[in-house]
Every structure is written in structure tokens, then in C-alpha cells.
Image 1 (cartoon, one colour):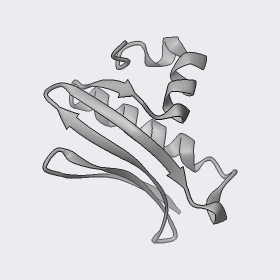
Image 2 (tube, rainbow, N blue to C red):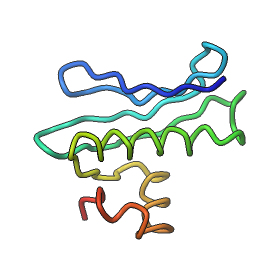
Image 3 (cartoon, rainbow, N blue to C red):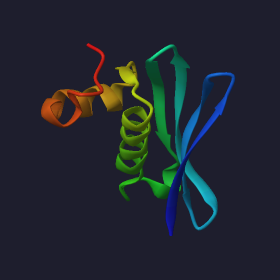
Image 4 (cartoon, helix red, strand yellow):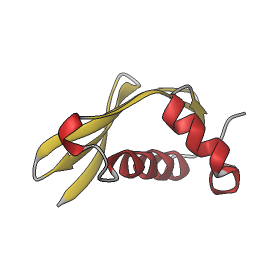
Length: 95
């Protein structure tokens, strides 16, 4: 069963995804004021192609919406998804 979590320490942290209690991937993030910057997304090789990056992105966006944050997508994966689906992310995309 997959689960996602947001772990922050001093406004820096990760969005993490787990499969059967094993960490499957993460996003490096930082929050400064009302801006959430995502730097990097990584899914470990054993879990690639199973939708884990999408789960991470969903958790990131949900967290931003719940906390009234705007996302700065420095991560190529997140930026690509924002560009492909601008209507889905327009409320959280800090352009």
C-alpha cells in the first residue's frame, strides 16, 4: 500500500512516498514565506514506471493548497507537468 508524507525540518524537507513501508522516492522542497520551492524529484529504480512521481506531485500540490502556498517548480519533472496541465495547477503555480 502506497502512502505519501511531507516531512519538514526548519522549512526544508521532503515529500516522501512509501511502498510497503519502504521509501520509494522523494521530492526535495523548501518553504519560504508563502512560497514552496521544489528542487528535485526522484523515484528509486525499483519503483520506476509505477506512478510514484505522480503520487509525489499530488501530495505536493495538496499540501500547497491546504497551506495556501505557491509552488516554484525548479524541478524539471514538476515544471513539465505544470506546463502540460496548466489549468490543473494554475491556483498553486508561482509564475
